[in-house]
Length: 499
Image (cartoon, rainbow, N blue to C red; front, side, top):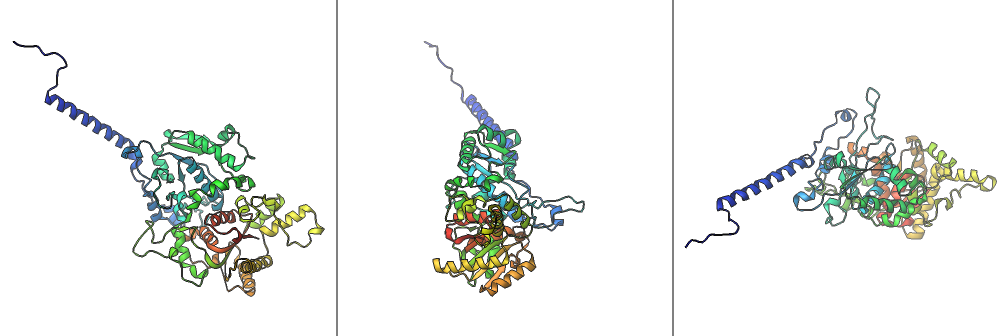
């Protein structure tokens, strides 16, 4: 007797195989579509030689550009190889420009700190020195062709795409990326744009807002945005006025413990320059952390390692920053406006966190009882901003004496970071030698190769940071950056002095 089967009809083996094959093909097609969709974002960008730059004698930094392009974080988004989310970036598209390196640097470091707190990867750009260019940049037709310096020619560490931890075990998706990779990973159609001025108004921030309040509210804003690509445009979160006021100082407790400062280092290019010129700073051979690693290229493009600011100082060296050149007019402007020290320079005084205006600006002026308060203020500012050769010699004599009496430091060698006139500098050196300094050298004595000449100011700053004792110009952003890197490296605040 035949029975009739009921229920779901089972597929034959050939039918099952066809469906499985179809699903595999569909998955493969989807995979190819995804790869094709992201292909333009995974292809390494071409590094082109700038013919106009070469005609002007500019270095091309080819090896450093290759190194930056090949940073491991410049890769496919994580969701294509096992992750679940795309990396999150923030690009400060209109950060300060048209100013000198140190105005740019101080803002970039704080922007990188803001990005880190917001759990986003910082986007670092090239530096284009439109102010005080290290090489001629005018073409025959009179237009300018700016030199473009890759970040890794100046810095290493988190701001330039290095690790956020000293052991290198940090999340690659949080590491800073180059502007070139931003252009690959974040097409304009996918970018969320924040207008600085509009966002400031929405958060009730203005020109009088405290630095910590600005930082905190911007962290909250950036962290709240789920989109992976955010561009901050039409202004600076941390503007020029903030860096020249005591409103900046409230950021220091957070900032000083950030990997941005804790792992700050000068580039291997700068390490190489200091190694070759070490005889200017010390009679001893260069320490191991400055020497090249023969047969090995630990940083990808050179045998030299980055120079962390936490390395031991160059013992016996007093390094000073003497700003000259066109700075006289700036000093007069500062005096007339009753300006105070640049923000971070307050950290180099034992009276921090008092406002810089409370410091004695001019006790060396003997006629203070015979002039008005305004004239006293102006004279004091000029004295500290534009010190005379005689006052420089006297100040160095005092600092050398106090270093022996108070801390047992014997300062024998002197390095002068300056852009002063060569005749003026020669006369100053003669006066210093007569005052008992064993050896006096300056920026003019440094033997630098072409790429190093492009970053000569950063080479000077690395020496000022590494010296056992430092004297700087409290009104200068260069001195201000040296102060923060010295403190980041653990230098004693008592080793920081001003004119």
